[in-house]
Length: 359
Image (tube, rainbow, N blue to C red; front, side, top):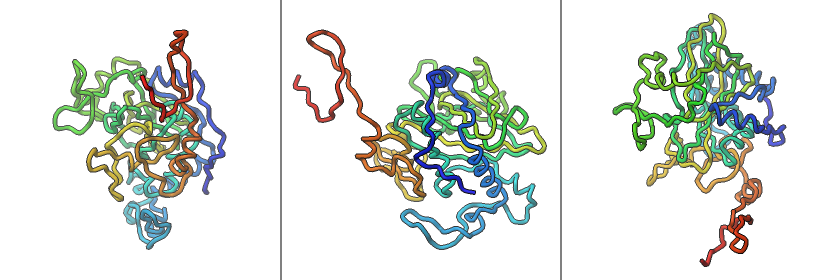
């Protein structure tokens, strides 16, 4: 089954209350943002991947390279070992990164139009798609301790936002996410010397942290910061989407069930006018040799930008496929506030990048 995600989708308009909720608590849950058909497609695809049945896992898919629509047939995606039982294959993967660079379905859901509608309102209007992740959290699998996503994916200005799509119903038993409500006001805490991560060192009283993402609270320094806030369990139904900023502290716990999975598709995004050095697409080598900028590895999903960007490999409709004139037209005309020297009042006029102020 293939679901067509077209530009003529039913647009989702974020309400003032939803916008305020995101700003106040650091996350926003939107019920039923994906259709039942989309959930079924994601679930069937994930189950096929878990069992190693995808064409890319069996050697029945074309070996895709940039600029090619077809190629030699070979296996391009890892699969569970053939000798494993179906149950063992289902438990083989826990988390897979960046599949949107290998599979068209993951590109389509990273650029899902209703998800982008929300992101336009929360961090846009210009949106860059940075990362895709597929979580396959089976029975007994561990959770992830308290962390901030901007610790791992720095953007400058810091506009990172995640969109977590529930493929299965999730609750406290199979490892739903927890959020420290209001913790988005915290800075990004930097790692202790010798550990990987990014943070803000230029604040007086900055505390360096160790054990970020460690599910053992006693070994995770962010646990003490999370304890300053109400910690909310965010249950969700399949098709719900949780949006959360890069600063908010969040975690998940162990899947304690015997027979339920907690599968989810997660995209990370930032404003397309933010600079990043994260996530270089090493297969095409697009990192700027002078600045280390990797924006050209990431897809312009909505709006426009003065920075470089990538186009979708599989042709999913998005802003990156528009001409510069179409992007400018679609993004509308900005206005500039001006001081009325005669009356002392503030007025506005359409911005003109070629206008020169002789004063």
